[in-house]
Image 1 (spheres, rainbow, N blue to C red):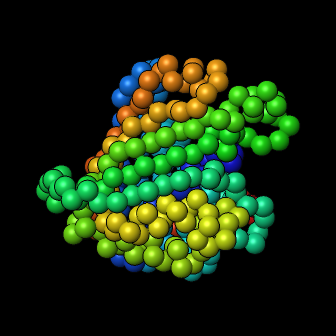
Image 2: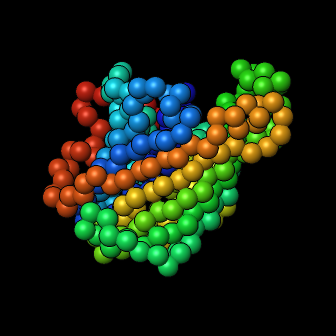
Image 3: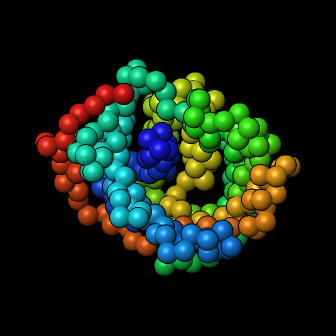
Length: 268
């Protein structure tokens, strides 16, 4: 669970922006049989704060908030745990790399445009594939039989991202991908060389299509053989919709990007 939270925080931080003060709030909805099976489970609400070379992500879900602070200049990410008031500081040299699943990702413009919340957005087709065995916990806690069942199962996501190039905050988002790639911070935290890791692939895709992702619509399905793949396929495809609900360029307080004084600092 801890690695899953760290992974979610790092991925969220790898998709935010840089330079001026910007706050972006995104919400998520899901459609399909798999989504219905979740019942009343809450879906994430993600708030991104950007100030200079620091960025903060607050992911709210099921009454819990996962907060992380990325500092490009200091080359560190801090994961804040409000439940026990601890701050885990991660740097490329402070401990074991955070395992990240290997992914294949492509993103390219389609030539289509539409207006969303008053912003002109260009459509980009995106496809992402990962092996489910890569996202399973590693170690003795995973029975060999379970690992074997997931060996040939792949999660495939395809859809569209509608990007606003001229919207407030768009240039900050585009600048972050460039700065993050040059810093190699996120790739180093996942134990990959620059240009070779899964986060590099995500950021390179974003850098090739700069702007604010106002609307993301992705359909997820499972492929492969065996009983596990067949069970997942019976649920049918699931559509995930992520949308920007608000953007603000109001000044942000410096203490939003610092570790609270009453938190205990831990280094990984």
